[in-house]
Image (cartoon, rainbow, N blue to C red; front, side, top):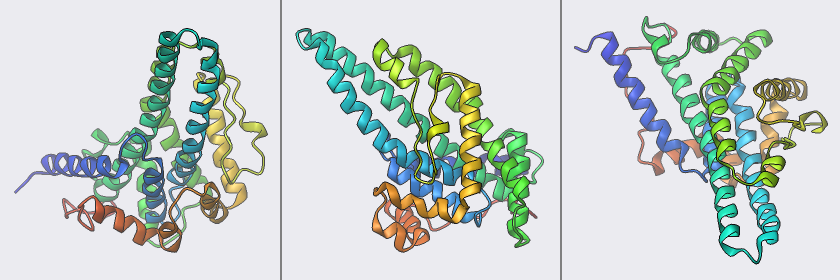
Length: 282
């Protein structure tokens, strides 16, 4: 019989492989939005981070498309330098792909952290796979769900903060720094550092205009503000606002859970993960 450590390692690898398939390729932002929403829905609305991440994926799809169009227009200054123009556009494409990859990696790791902790959160070795502050916050979420009680607002915020600070430290921060360092186009770099985030549930995006996207402190401040605006709007309204991007398929809105099951079937994944050591909430 497998000992606890080998079961944890086996199940984490299983969940990670599944998450990688579900997250799709660089351009599958719509698919990732469905996966993010699944994490919110599976938690009974207690885990708000993936709901806001779903907005990020859908907003990002339009933002990246617009950015490529703007880049094509700005590249006209190199009209008589075709090699330089191609090089600038190549850098822009690589920059956009780097941000799509950030979204993909966050989706994979968020899925792993949620489902691994749901199964093994109370195991002694769980913190080797999920950072302790995030693990603690997820375990509170899973316990509340197992006991069929709401997650208090303070604990919802703790869970969002734990997820958000984790992604900034381990994925977003290093990847943004690397992407900006590789972007050899000063004009585009200047534009890229000052985006205005406009999620569909925002009453106003005035507060979400960046002065320096390279600043970790500003990204954290804006991320926490996005969460506050979600709570103020009401999570049901935030969820309903996913339709405003006009990107998700109609099947999602007819039944998001059945849509996610269909996604799993299309990827030849089983309906559920195979049973392992046991529930993390036991």
